Amino acid sequence: MANEDKTIAIAGAGSIGCYAGACLALAGRQVVLLARPRIDEALRKAGLRVTDLAGRDRLIKADALSVAADPARGLSEADVILVTVKSGATQDMAGLIAAHARPDAVVVSLQNGVDNADRLRAGLAGRLVLAGMVPFNVVQSPDGELPLRMHRASDGKVIIEDGPAGLVELLDVAGLAVETHGDMKAVLWGKLLLNLNNALVALSGLPLAAQLVDRRWRLILAGQIDEALAALKASGIEPARIAGLRPALLPKVLRLPDWLFKLVARRMLAIDPEARSSMWDDLQRGRPTEIGDLQGAVLGLAEKTGTPALLVKRVAALVREAEQEKRGSPGLMPEAITSGLRSG
Image (cartoon, rainbow, N blue to C red; front, top):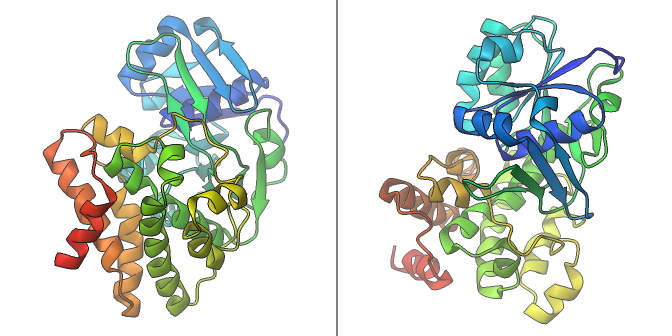
């Protein structure tokens, strides 16, 4: 797959999609951003600015961007389609790709959760669909700020399933390092263990860095990971190492005293001070969250294997309650989760 004349469609130009698309466009790739009307309007008006922890600060002017709100225009000429929509929109996006994209387009899922690639394959029979994993989070500028800015607030390489020759070279650009892995199921479950913290950020309202240095919150995350690891072990699934630590060691490190955790987990704490999770952003905007694809995946596995997951269940219930109330993050303290677990 030569880089020349290949068009990459970003199917779902939100935070991750805009960041990835901007990095690719800045590297000279031909990119089309399929965006919701709000994003589409902002990009057409003032362009797109991308920044990251390495100090990069780059701007793509509006006239240098190719943006489409119409799926027919955004998908029809794509050689590669990067799916970056939230998990709840996966089935709908599969339908759009089936209706508008070329049959030979390579589809890559860059989404949270463990089964989005399978959902895409179910709706795209006969097409090549690859699983992928994005290890970092991206913070979007506040509404009304122009140009729209996407800031990569943590580090790591995007990992994708082995695919056609040249695909990695097409996607691996400055600010968006990409590599392949032979066992994406292990990679996706390894990432999901870390993503169990998304809900705690959403429930607390704290920036990720501030939440992680508070042992009370880390104990809750450690408990969730313990429950997930038990369900994975009973299922014969070995999660991959994502954050530099073997998954089995994560709960032990998270339970360390604050002072020792700060020394041992420097890589985990290499985060922008204001970064929060996409689940927090969903609550703030009154949108459905991905709780069913994160904690929900663990609960599904636990039910199949007969392993307990009371803490994961409690966290999921609190997020669903906050979704229904539509008042943003409830700003809970750790005790609100653990005391409710004891009383339940």
